[in-house]
Length: 290
Image (cartoon, rainbow, N blue to C red; front, side):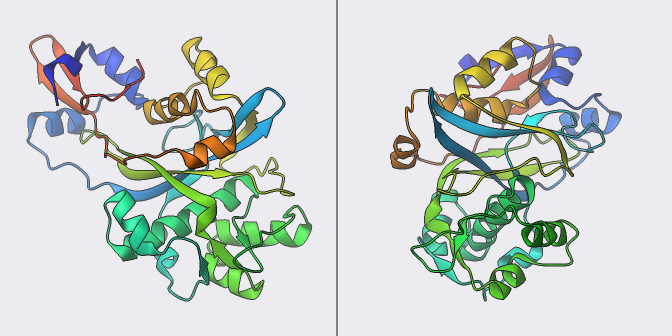
């Protein structure tokens, strides 16, 4: 952390940046060191990109207003790791868990679960499945009624990813994912996540659809346009979403994104009480979106 990366915020500004709606007494207690912070839950999020006529586009969904976390916010497909994401019976193609463990600073069991969660959440929230009948193939289309039944079963947890892939004779394609970033929710928040961000290219032949459920609107947009609309107050997004969108700016094609060399450094902003109100501290070199 560096003093040059500090900014003094009023309570109202903290609310705006955190998207919390309110600063509760417990949150003040965490800041004051009187209460132990909540342990963050492991989560996986996927920046799904595609090539469009005007360049690179990324898939965004708007979380329904009834969601407990980040209601009404635009985000990428993603969510918490499910215990069943650690199932070792899943047929696997691509970089093994030990390579993902090195990239994300996790043990192999968690790394496997994170990759599986990324694949599962992408299918649940976009209908896109990063799997295929062999290690060199990918599912061509997932828009049929039978696929929708499987997606709903994953959502209500009556079906696990391992069961879905086994029943359909599919191999998980970890090679279709690349590690991109890692953000940890500030300690004062009551709902915290240790989120690993992946990037993946929309597989040829597959088309995402408006799947409903946790999202009430989905869209494809260039990273530049998404950031522009966020700055204009037209798209509500949490800082990690904006920061990852900004990190895509400058890449002309999905292939350039996949070829990018990224060192995954955990980013955990800190809020501290100070004479001027609250001070936000972020690591050196982090382009924190204000």
